[in-house]
Amino acid sequence: MDTLRRAALLADEGRPFALVTVTWRRGPSSGVPGSKALVHPDGTVEGWIGGACAEPTLVATALEALADGRPRLVVLGEHDGRPDVVEVPMACSSEGAMEVFVEPMIPPPTVHVVGRSPMVDTLAALVGDLGWKVTVAAEPPLGTVTEGSFVVVATQGHHDEHALEAALGTPARYIGLVASAKRAATLLEWLRGQGFDEEDLSRIRAPAGMDLGPVRHREIAVAILAELVALEAAGVRRGAVGVRAPARATDPVCGMVVDVTTAPWETVHRGRPVYFCARSCLEAFEADPGAFDAS
Figure 1 (cartoon, rainbow, N blue to C red):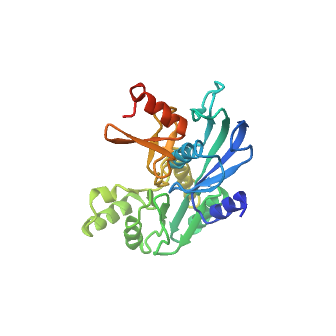
Figure 2: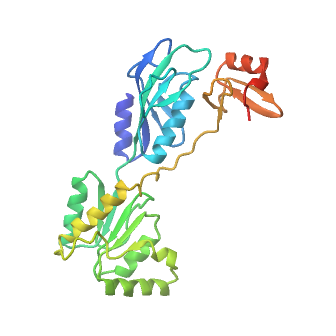
Figure 3: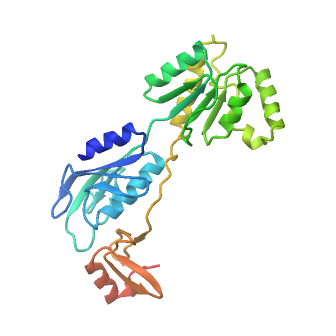
């Protein structure tokens, strides 16, 4: 399947990945402009972004991008001095260079709203307008709630207790309660009686939403959305993608990142394995191990 069509499929499924694109090269280099690959959170790769010198470094960079949500422009080889560029040396046996753009594709946040009212309808519409995902349920269950999800309990006297219990049983990053201060205090006290501790209760924001002053019922949706956007921009969700980086090592000769499970060359120095990206690096190391830091 074409890489971009595969990327679109993953995005539709709400699965995170990094899109890695070669934007420039100076030969000899196995990657060519336009070459694309998808890097999954477990480090597996679909597509082609270069050979043994480039791929491990680009995979490691892609996983970093997935973890913090920020794209990177990577230059493998001689750097031209531009700011905000990640510079990585190429293998000693290579004279090529590549420029690669690494773009994390993280699914948009999902907002789970519990309740039914004109305010709920307004909030759901506004969330959808942002391109975020939204689910609405009149009462629990909440559906699939992940660490990157927001939950808004707007049951307003209908199943409040059960909705909050259900929300606290999820890993949601945000639980907002639409209620007056008096009603919220009553609900928190009830939850304490059910065995929830203060750490649990601290996850609940009540009243939900930014303080926009006295607003009408439907306008509460704007206050809540403003709070969610602020939290998203502040990075509450960012980093929610769990990555499982393969075991890596650094070639002590050229500084390239090497996947230890597939490293083509290795030796043992002072009782410890040392991995290399190319035969020339291994030969240089064996000729004078003391000249390189293999710790």
